[in-house]
Amino acid sequence: MDYVQWIELAAASASAAVLGSMLGLGGGVFLVPIFTLFFGISTKTAIAASAVAVVTNSVVGSQTHLRNGFVNLRLGMMLQVTTAIGALIGAFAGVWAPDKALRIIFGAVLIYSALAMVRKRQASYDTSHDPDPHELGASFKDGGKDVKYVPSAIRTGLGISGTAGVLSGMLGVGGGVIQVPAMNLFMMVPLKAAAGTSAFMVGITSVATAFVHYSDGNVDPTVVAPAMIGIFAGGKLGSTLTKRLKVADLLIIFVVIIAFLGVSMFLTGIGIHVPWQR
Amino acid sequence: MSTPSTPLPESTAPINARAASVLKWGFRISAVMLAIGIIDSLIRGNDIPTNATRLADLVPRLLDGDGGAIVTLSIVSMIATPVVATLVVALGFLDLGDRRYARLSFAVLTVLIVSVIAAFVRQ
Image (tube, rainbow over all chains, first blue to last red; front, side, top):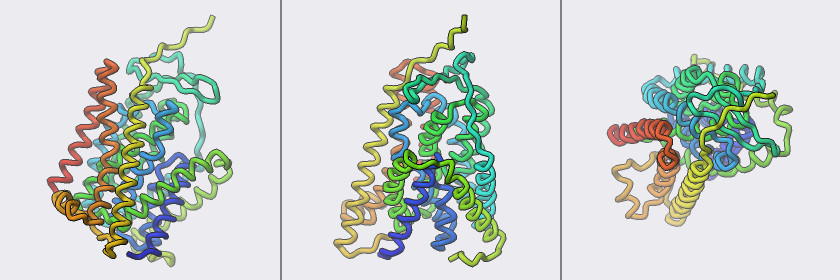
């Protein structure tokens, strides 16, 4: 057993989990490029490990969201129908796709994510009087206040969720980077409920990816096990740090990291060797 | 006079609590098995294999006390945890008498089961 690599993989996964939980993401967007660029792990093995790590992060992280009422189960299950179908299609496409194509797509998604974070804004609406034909309305306590909301634009949400599912299945990421802004900006769901619902959903979404890659022999326990250990530690640390640090101040650093990883993945995908590639 | 707000559907708080319990126990079981698998491999001086144990070989290898198979079981049980949580949510909606969301939850569960079956068939 290569103990040094285990420690390095666990530390990298813990860092991804810390960053991911601070940003309300699953952490998968960091793991695949870190594994492929800095550890020389094949893209498909990295995607498989990332999918298991995203499930782990969701299982660890969404318990609190569920108990706090931030997870809207009706909304989650409705959106999950198209997300899960998309993920299953994406997972099979990912297994068959060439390594370089996956790197190019991943690079493009990371660059998009970086740009989306730069433009990130939090929308707040009063939807408590809106009609609720799908019975998706819910409420949660926020700072002693009862926040009541009724999600809207369900068809748009279902379409975006299906796309997020395909990308998630193909690339081993949770899809939170697409789901959270979609729920908040288009469906008018308060950010806390959007992040909580997405945290629960990404675990279900990544099941298909993980099982399809497991069946294809891409799950490497020497990568997945240290990643899981890192996620166990990082997920808890991230939620503690989130309470103490001003995430907005760190946003620019995260954008730089994601843009750097995205450009690196894209360049290696089109056959350009980057000096830090192992 | 302000317009009364839209009445909310029945709260899913009991289902949320049940789903959270499933996740908690799924995490605990997976973490314990991961620790046992790693410790077993260390004690026996075996390397953890770079390929997860195939589902068909999992039970015989577990009966042999193979640490690598225990690590694979930990990974599989972690991946299976959201599937069980989805089943619990679907049953919770049935208990609540919310047939629409029970059906949607079972539809999600069906897609997940299809992915698991696809995994078995491909192996």
